[in-house]
View 1 (cartoon, rainbow, N blue to C red):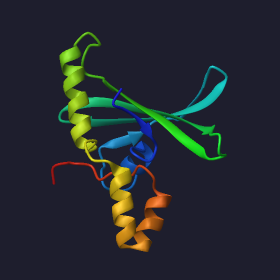
View 2: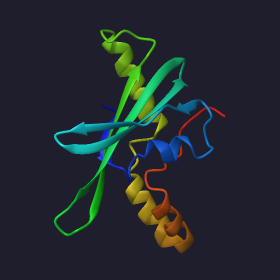
View 3: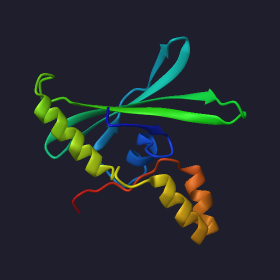
Amino acid sequence: NLATATGNELNLKNTLLNGQCFNWVQAKTVPLTKNRLKLKEQRFIGVLNGNVVLLSQCYSEIQQLRGEHLHLTTVRYKCLNAAKTDTEKQDRVGQDLHAYFQLDESLEERYKHWGKQCPRVASICACLPGLRVVRQDP
């Protein structure tokens, strides 16, 4: 797993399809059912540092006690040009993805800070949860 977080921290669709990167293609969305919970899985295929990578993100809406909805997401990755047993290469791809999505930064904290500075930015952030600026070569 690359990350387990709310969709506010990393949303693959919002990040990869917003026009900032062109090396990712969205594959077919797959409906899943686990423990009677209906999920959807979005998949993306791209190239990162010479590796062909499959990213997938499962999401669902869960009703919380106070009536709020929480989007839970799990982002998984798989290096398609490495054997499953090549754990060193798989781990390196995970580190590359971590840096690419800048996951050391709390996006929710950034959104709060930016939103305090500008109400327009706050409304944009609310519409695009989990949108990250990716770290890539110019």
